[in-house]
Length: 187
Image 1: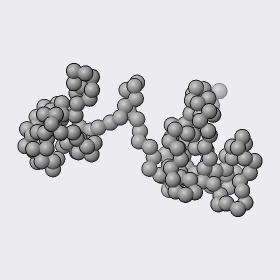
Image 2 (image 1 turned 90 degrees about the horizontal axis):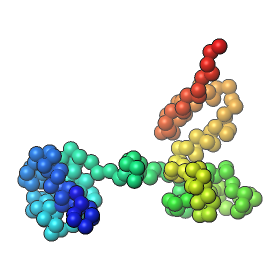
Image 3 (image 1 turned 60 degrees about the vertical axis):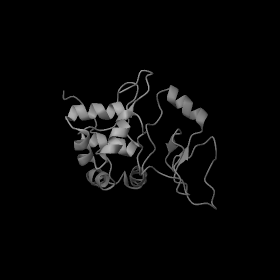
Image 4 (image 1 turned 90 degrees about the vertical axis):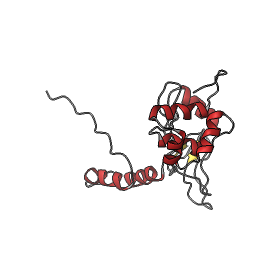
């Protein structure tokens, strides 16, 4: 899929996808809804291709586009419901976001009374780099569901009903089930 200079060539990838699925340009056009002339132009290198169109052509050939790390692992997309700041903006993707109850001591001692409660905090770049080197960097930002779960756990976590209702709460918030704690070996 790469040309002689090592650059990814989408046209060659489409030709490979058609070969894999045993499709003519006309067949691929019919299945994908992309004009046959557009497919021909992409394959010949006479035209670039947008990622959405490229993904649509691959899907019509029963293939998918994925982003992989240098180790070959699929990179999960950033969570669409990741927590945002009080103005509705995403926190910087390269920084670790802390839950609102985890106030970073190096910046402020307590939130300001004249502002809305913070939806999250983040470590500055130097702290993030130290955490990354130590292998403690986060994979993504917390989601709104994770923060809601954290609030509920802080408030009700010691209640006698919490262990029984926790799976239902996690499910309602769209979170994965909690990992089972390891059991002690029987003597």
